[in-house]
Structures are given as C-alpha cells and as structure tokens.
Amino acid sequence: MLYAMVELRMRVPNKKEEKMAAKVIFSILTENHEGPIGDDWRYWVEAKVFNQGLKGKGKIEVKKHSLPSGTTQEPPGPPAPLELPAGEGGQRVHVKLTLQATEVDLFRNDVGKVDIDVRLECPGSGEEPLVHDGKISVGVVESPGITGETSIVTLAYRLVFSCD
Figure 1 (cartoon, rainbow, N blue to C red):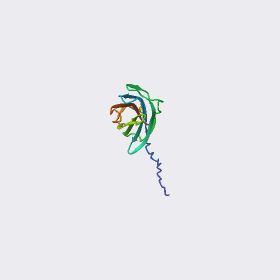
Figure 2: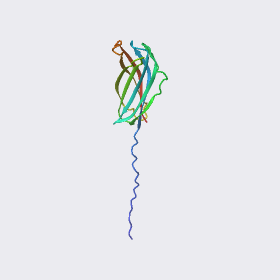
Figure 3: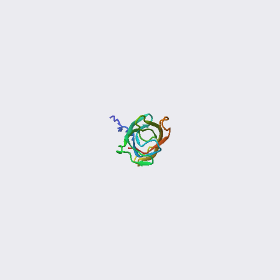
Figure 4: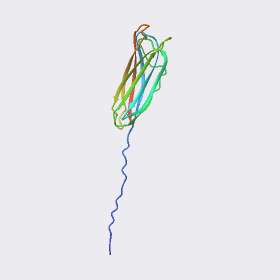
C-alpha cells in the first residue's frame, strides 16, 4: 500500500501597506497695513503644496476693502480656508505662499508681490495635526511720480498639516 503525504500551506496574500493621505489646510487669520499710501486694498494669496512634485494648489482672494494704516483686522468675509491635497503622508512637505497686495487708486494701482517657503513635518498616524502659524509681508511702493512712499501689508496665516 502506498501512502502519500500532502502538505497543505495556506497562502495569505500580503496586504500592501496602506499609505496615509496627507492634506494641508491654509487660512488667513488677520491683515495689517502700516504706511502712508492709502486705505483701499485688495490682495490674493496662492498656496502650492509640494511632496515629490506639486500635489495641491489654491488661491484665496480678498476683494477691495478699507484697511487704514495701523489697523489689524480679520479679513472681510472672512475668506474660507483652503483644503489642499499633500500627497502621501509620512513625509515632509514644502508649501509655497505667494502674496500679491494692491493699493487701489483712482488712476494707477500700486502693487507688491512676495513669495515665501514653509517646510512642514508630517505628524505620525493617529497624532494631532501639526499647526503652523506665520506671517507674510509685502512692501507696496506708491507710484514714483506721486510720492514714492512705501506701505507694508502683513497677513497672519495658519497651515494645518494632517496625515489620515
């Protein structure tokens, strides 16, 4: 009599480790104007999130409104925060913010533009989101034919970085 021994092995497919989805929420907290060149302002801020390439971008625009010199206030509205994809979690991201502020004149608007870079470390899975508060400022020069003076517009912003 012949007996055969058969070995059964169960093969369980390997689950591919799930990658965490990351996101950055960008919001403007306050605006400030210091300087002599006018009270009527508008501006926009563009946020771009990079994580091994561009993953998300968006823009907050604030329409013409009164912002007298020496004033710090919440932007009109206030504008809704932007929720931007940030690629796979577990990695550092680079956020580029571009601010363009315009002092609105009857004949010729005065414009200033600036870029800043912010690097954020991703919190671990299950950890609280990383909150980064910062400021971005731009100088706006009055047309040289008028006064040539400069005003500074400063925005306080918040970036919240989370990995789900």
